[in-house]
Length: 429
Image (cartoon, rainbow, N blue to C red; front, side):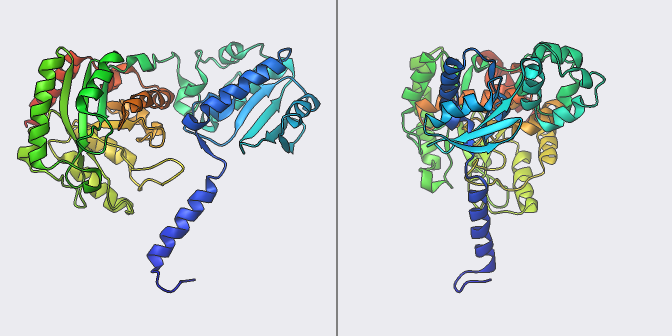
């Protein structure tokens, strides 16, 4: 049905937005639910101290979206009901193997009921993704895991190394013979992609730099918005020159800490960037991102992104799909084609660590690594507090088996300077 005054395309966009909203009711960002999950877990451990109890499911796997919190427990249904009904929870579902509750926070808590003998197998099955499990079920030892004494025994039976639960998602992970040395938060050596009060950030460049020094980072990449982002006070060419003079002064003042001159440059509708090459050449590196006209077909999105990737001044492709998790679907892209283009043009792909972005999606990182493309875990910080978002990027990257050697923001200052110098030589800019 068409409503007067609204075109068919507009109505379709509104309908899609409404459907997306209702589809995600009851879902939560990992970052939003983490404190609650750990708090409930602590209370459960205190109350059910005589039972085996472990958080499992999506939360244990560090998924970016948590639809429900899950536990494996050896307590019975009556014991669980007595505890939760006394704490203003209601029973949602009940079966022979599970019982679930929902409280005032409207978060579903699911309990997988297990006998001590089957606890390890139940924990393993509930803390792994379906693709991973499908491969495991084909292994010779699958029918022998039911009475394993612990998770280590389950993994040994399946001839798997001691994979943490966050590495039990994709089918390739079920064929690993060694545990990759996945990246840790302590491996992040710098803040790449941050905004100051020159555009839409809250702090001065000096304040951002001093916060980096206080947190033990070796360098800072300031990447304020470009001029097309007028809504974010994007920098005109003259203001760029002023900022660069200011950064030069700060680098003398704060030595040996270093601030790199960058910009988050808008990818325009035709894929071009919104500064001339002569201006782009004044930056140490350029992050290119789409911020406008996000309602695109895959064909249009790919044309814009591939054109930007081919630009010799593009160093990092920022938040690849423009998604805002649980708020806005990203525009459709061919991830493999973008990865191939970045490999060909020596462009790094950002894993934007803001918990509402986490873009690129971790599910494609393994392919990027296999094709020799660097990832950069960047907080896209608009405040000093935003630096802490690096942790959520690390949690997502761990799921793909990312190591510090494959992550640009893990480079030391000397390594980063060498990277920039080598890249300019290769791309002849």
